Image (cartoon, rainbow, N blue to C red; front, side, top):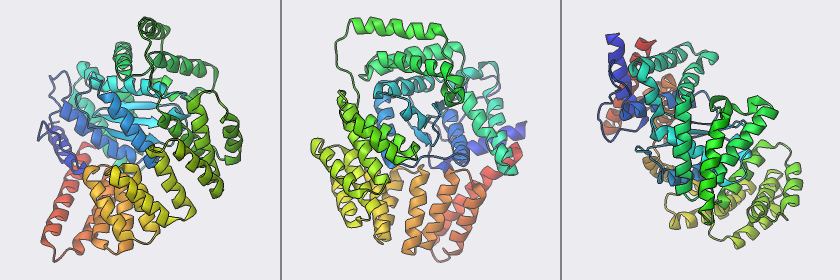
Length: 480
């Protein structure tokens, strides 16, 4: 057992190869066998180690506009939350079921099904506030009171090691399932506490207090009457009647004393339409639906239906119609970044690369390092055979978003096209590290090492990276 504890320490120490180092500790401390909880830095490092393996076994949605929206929403909600460590990592999963989860270390995951089954931004925000409350109250750590946090960490890491060593597709899911279950299988008191704190956070953030009650009530009703497999969130977050009653009481008390206007950001409705267009194979069906909804008396519904109509025409390659509708929307909302980025995306889809590049540069002059515009501009550079410009742009973006595998994947593509083969291998290695594929990362770094004979600093950097991965692999092997 001593050896296992030693190697666990090595694993967590070398998890700095995921590019993130805790601010408070140079060496994470999970706790000891008499400890009642896991430390903040221990949660952070354990979560990042799990995240790499999880990313290697699931399908993330790489829409940069959706990622930008979710990041903005979570950070906005976190400002009025009790979360101490706001080094979040976000996952958007290509899954139409209703689910969201928070894993230790600030990891927040959401299925596209959450966008498909919510009607207002406040409803989505209510679920996110509930998950943020689990993080702020450190419910994962508090569930370890009956057993050693180290033993639980060893169990999870052991599952990861078995999955990595066996290369069994079924085994690959053991560790993510274990960690996700441990992160959300909270006690009834944990759930009630998350309701209370999440509700307060929702109200402080400016949303309608009724949104949480409506969201969970609607999900509960559908869960009881429809295919339960589509409601995995309620399978892990059951809502007894007394919890819904508590929410209603708090809502009624606040509504009596408040006459304020509540948030319902149009960008949420845009994201909802992006999810719908992704999920629906028959775009013509969506054209009919959105045309019908253009006359909705609810302004956000009518505006977003026009946006959905443009997206549907783009999917059908009816570019003239798509451009006409989208430009009308931009005239109505000239400073909306989602609409401007969507125009870039439409230019890309229709092959207008010069227009996409010009628009992207204009956006970045005003909104420096905007994620959506940067990723789309990189695509435009690549398509316009200006891969060196894409490489420069993505390299700068990677400095502030070191743990985003999508950036490293696209950067490797740009470097390959520009002939920068040494850096291509290094970027591919970072992508494989972030998705839990150590052997593939080692292969790429060895290829980089062979090309760096006369570049002392680069060679030393590659060697250090290899040493970190080998140390982590030895630790995982020992745990298994």
